[in-house]
Length: 158
Image 1 (cartoon, rainbow, N blue to C red):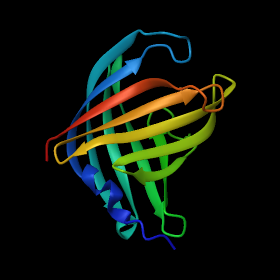
Image 2 (image 1 turned 180 degrees about the vertical axis):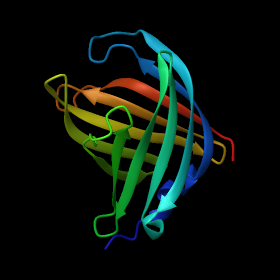
Image 3 (image 1 turned 90 degrees about the horizontal axis):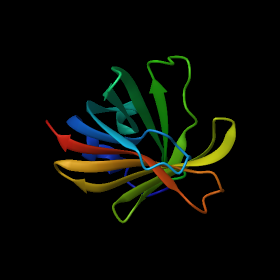
Image 4 (image 1 turned 135 degrees about the vertical axis):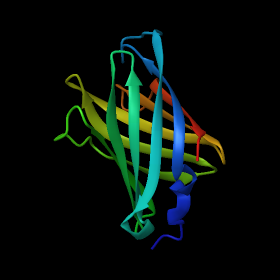
């Protein structure tokens, strides 16, 4: 049984404004980014053993909703994070799994992007009472190199 606290994601409880920055083309050696706004609200579930993050993502071509669902395994000390996009309501993404160390959360998964096996990495960092950062990166070479393709800068509203 892990002694890691389940409270590691408590920093995200509440309401947030989000500044998104996303690569227009992933794994194409592109440096063409787009930025857009969004909102996010996170609350605990499972008696504190998990949480759900409800997002409104203001893409330039139209907003959509999505959730991140997180649960903590007290036996392993690991979190799992699933993504559910309302545009594809019957598809739950492969979970990224990981933990926090020295104030940074690192979560990894094996997945497929456009038919190519990749590794996916989520990083939670820069965690302060009024702000935090999430980043997503893909690796097509087993984790030797990473391309960050999405960054979310959170600013607390409530």
